[in-house]
Length: 197
Image (tube, rainbow, N blue to C red; front, side, top):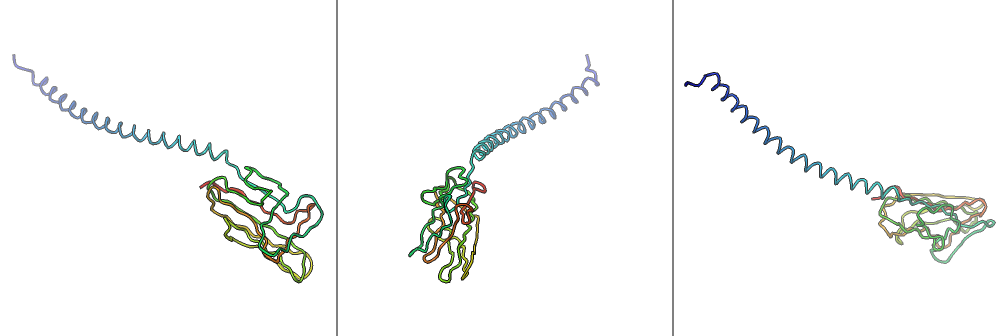
């Protein structure tokens, strides 16, 4: 019996088509393995991102403190040497990073922090209000004003990168003084975490 030519050509066509399909299946299997690896990487990244978001959501650091507790108007200083100012009247201390007993802010985590210092004084021919913000004992910026009479004030601020445990404080320079009124709170030190690094 002689094979039918149509059947032979169909078999050849089917064999060629199967060969093409086997190649496509091999390519799809390889692509599937690559995508599975990429999916594992994406899932791990997603889990890490969720962990970071959860951690950062709970991190809140902000404080605002005034020089004096509710008492009448008072001058602090002048001192013979540069002296750390202790802002005793704490208005806000989220995260408890500011210590009202020492006047020192201690960074609870690595991040970018914003600090502001407002200083007021009563004019006197021999004194000025000159206070500096210090990071780990190193001068960062100052507030300064001087008038021979009347009230005068000065302010300054900066965003600083801090490592966990870094300290920030305000110091009154030797010979300078600062004024506050416990009722109106003219002189203040404040800061907050802008974002973790």
